[in-house]
Amino acid sequence: MTDNNKEKLTIAYTSLAVGVVIIILGLPLWWVTTEVYRAPLPYNRIAQLGFMQPNSVIPVEIVWLVNNGNVASSTNFLLQLKANLKPVSSDNMTIINYEVSTRTGDKKEMTIIKENYASLAELDHKLNMLNSEPRGFRFYLLQPIQMKSFADGIYVGIFRSTFILMEDGDSYESVLPKIQLVTKKIYVNEKVLKNTISSILGVREKKADVESMRAIRSTDSYQLSFTLINPEPHNVLARWKIEDAIKVYLDPFLEALKNYSKFSIDSQVLYYSGFSIKPLRDQITGSFYLTPTLLPRVINSIESRLGSHATSNPGVNFILYIPETRFKNLHIRMSKNDTRMTYSFISPRWGGFVIDSKVHNRTNATGIYDVNLKEAMEVFVAHLKLLLGIPKISISDDKIVEFGKSDIGLTKWEYHCLLRRRTLENVASANQTLTSLAKLLEEITNIVISDRIRELIDLSIEELDKSLHFMRSGDVIKAFSHSKSAVLNSEKAFFDSSLLELLYFPSDQKFAVYVPLFLPISLPVLQSLYYAIRFLYRQRKEKPKEE
Image (cartoon, rainbow, N blue to C red):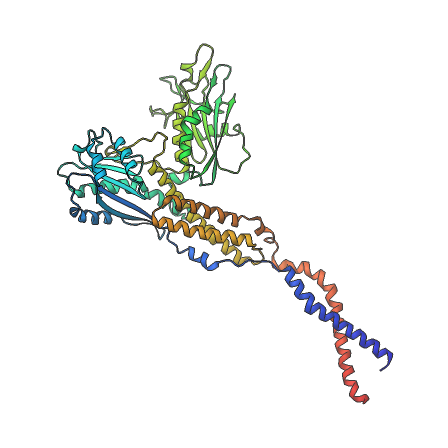
């Protein structure tokens, strides 16, 4: 073999070695290092969430405290009550199941009844101290002779017990409509729960209800802002002890909601910030008033002056307005011809507004006015209940129902009603978020799925399962806690910034990046491989001829 052939053979082997290294090692290494990491997700488990039933079991216990109560006679009554308290469904999902039971009062309960308390409020407190709070709701059946005074039919206590009067000669079936009324419309409020599910699932053909439009979305923390607006401090120097009022009237209410959410509070006083609109004047009385059509303009005129807070939490504004001296007895009317007056209104998902028109009648000689915050704070607490989603109970025949009044402004059954509503809302929202995220990740294959995303999704599914378990067992407090964790983790996974890193880099644009990089390298390598293989093939053919 000549030296020229040896040199060509060396070049051929070198070309083959370079080609083999690039093809066998270089390409796989490039593929592995540029591959989009996608942690395995439980797609099948997420798909099954669409068929889940957020079934909340509500135990209803009937306790006979009537004299000579016969349990045997309650069989038909129990069957009829179960027939009246049917499961509640919304959008092909069972959301409420009632678990009905009945018993006679035990010795301790009958002993308490014989003490003949003066009011049902006292009896409610005494029985609540005696018995552990029920998982659901309890109804006590009484006779007039067992109490010194009684409401006309139904007394709904501040815990989770209701007292129903049975007149002499009344059949047990006569209390069925009363139990059904309290359970469905007061304790559970089925209409609100149905509308909540429909709103979360986006059922557009159904008309939005007032409760859903008014309530602020459920979140882990809220910002409460109290503002005193005094447009004429040179005429009236209003002073308010807001810190003391918050401790007395608001803190007990918020303490009862500590397991529901966190609340941050701030306050401020604004001077020379009046309305940008002129209220209407009553020609007969000379007083001024606002109509519902003017109220949005009132909010718009002051909202820009309230300032902003460096927080991502939903804000709730409470405004106490001191009217100008020229606006005598400023109030709110539903229409021009309506003589009924009110001094407060609520703005959906924004806050509450109170007009203190008593200022000009109570200002002392020095022009100093000490604001009476008792009335204003009671209104603000009522507004906050509605904004948080605690529905206002409206019964057509409200004369037969008397409600116990809680010192903190929130009863136990209202609290549980709020938790039940928010639990269903959280479960539906987490389910929808996980389903949308799984669909998105399946369709767009170049999105990075990190181990953190997988852990958040797994944790959200686990919390959903726990929430559904406690809903079926009737423990609404634990069910809400786990549902809140489920929706928070699902939203963290959905809005994680790592999902956006390669979202706007479509696959067809990879050619525009890789062609200028690999084409100058691949062509010489492929060409040298071609010549090397051809040279070696010819060399192999020429060897037999030489021999």
